[in-house]
Length: 397
Ligand SMILES: Cc1cc2nc3c(=O)[nH]c(=O)nc-3n(C[C@H](O)[C@H](O)[C@H](O)COP(=O)(O)OP(=O)(O)OC[C@H]3O[C@@H](n4cnc5c(N)ncnc54)[C@H](O)[C@@H]3O)c2cc1C
Image 1 (cartoon, rainbow, N blue to C red):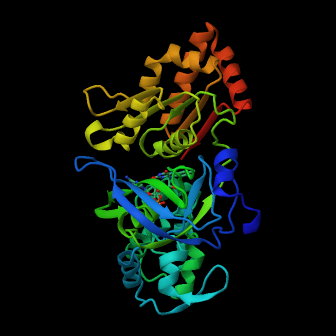
Image 2: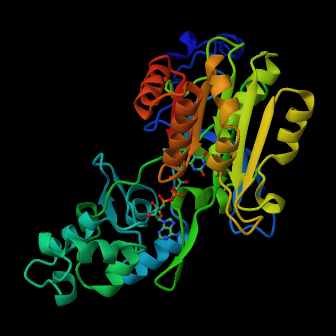
């Protein structure tokens, strides 16, 4: 889409329609970081940051969209791989587009040297030809799938080349072994109407220790450590038409967003606030501890005080002996939840796909069944109806 066909921010704000910009994952925009601050307190077991970045005129988004961030590995991680392989990084290789680049560049921005895939182990073994080390043989073939899964868990390329050295003879060989390094998506946490020319993110910095090594996620680690104010990062806007505020600005919305799942709902609320939209807003946020993990606490409490947030529920799992999660808060408000649905409320879930989203759906179904005084089948039918009307939307990862 050419720049001239893009709507102005004011049009975006009123119509709520999303649209692409000329920047893509293959041709990203170099965005300047304006603010990078820690949201979590010192006592937190997590490290969640708020990042504000500048956008060029014509780069427009609407609440529900995401930002694609193109990652690079930190120099220490690349140096460690080069050292283990016995190369210095100035060697020349051809990237996926057959463009000649340095081996260091390939390891920094083209290949996945972090999180090891099982396929990478197989490909690595193929390169060893007739000289596959015994330990590596034990990870190959359909019979050893479980052993291979076990091996790759929490490991990276550096572990593979250290455990089974001497296989990579040419830097180019690694293109046969490793997956391409791909951009990561982050739900946009800001409303363009409230922050013209800016995009804001809520990012959990992934850090963990496995097999005696400190590790970090490539993109969130980059945002956490190498994206201070004035740094530039390659980004692109990603439209998400399956996660949108209702077109009827008076329709009530219920938003379930624990952890970084809060991000798009901050955008929803800022949008409705800035444009003076009147629909009722119910937010359920959860995390470990109120003192350290209540993301954007002051902003949400102010929204509650002003009446923008009709209902705010929080669930801090570690603040009492018995763990309380967002789905428990929702269950406590089961009758009210059904009343909101009967008023035409839209129901949104964002965040952890593994458990939370399923548990929330179960509570939703139970609340509907109770409200209807009906069967589980009738509740499921009601939910299907909501889905058809786009009144049940999820953005889980
Ligand atoms: C639509 C969408 C929206 C998203 N929005 C957000 C958002 O708003 N905020 C946000 O923070 N994230 C968001 N994410 C997730 C985000 O895209 C990344 O997946 C996340 O930041 C991790 O990427 P990374 O590059 O830092 O880590 P990677 O380098 O991809 O590493 C992550 C991998 O590390 C491994 N790992 C992590 N922890 C452990 C552990 N304890 N033990 C062993 N292995 C482990 C796992 O294999 C995991 O898959 C979103 C994802 C999608 C798809």
